[in-house]
Length: 115
Image (cartoon, rainbow, N blue to C red; front, side, top):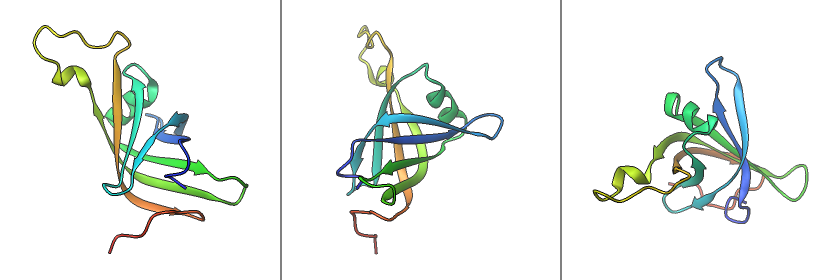
């Protein structure tokens, strides 16, 4: 299901300990077990993931019973960090949230479990 779908709900942890949920578009690399989400750098989810990288992505299927959840830790990749001297970053300051998936579960997983 992670391969078939392109959007889901990303959970991060607020400073109060409560969950924060954001609907996001994502890219799934099954071979590397990586999720990638683009966001602007000033978003709450980015600030929260910098503070506490624990996160989950919930993806719903075509019916109420099918779903997949990917859990892992996020790191924030800022293209400005790799910019050449004098090169200007994009005006909206986009970053990529890269999530190394450590656990998958659900009723509609479409990838094999690593051995």
